[in-house]
Image (cartoon, rainbow over all chains, first blue to last red; front, top):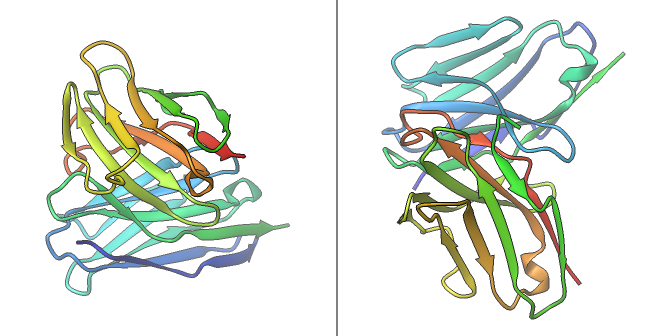
Length: 112
Length: 115
């Protein structure tokens, strides 16, 4: 089955700085990699995803990069704002199956 | 949250009682997934259903847990004879097709507390 590792577990940055969260996966057949943001008391919200046929995808201040050879993918948030503070999860499907395996999460704190 | 509706938001049960968690997927979505989240942990897959069919229940305990997604109405996750270890947040997600083709969108969860 898929194994997803996520680092760091906590990340504190100053407002305006960039934040980078990294994940590795084990199943070379995985072809879809979503990132979720979870605020306190809420469900995970999909913020960006990438498929294995591209190496990078960007949406305003958020970008995701994928290295299929090394089996790792990263989330980049630029010009961080206090409202970016939340727990972020990476995920990968188990091969061609539909279930997602989640990383253990990164608690991002953006300070003023 | 993205149109997936879960209820109740909070559920308190005593040990030995039954818990029923409901999930209405986004309009047009026919695939439903249930995940469990313990405090300070990631989400763990439990079961994947399509209308009237269980596709993958590999993450669901063999005893006391069951799930259904009838032709009409919401998907139900049922936990019989609850124990303290069942206390967790249970999240439902839906997609219009298999997740490796389409993203999964989550509801805001049901927080189950066992007294």
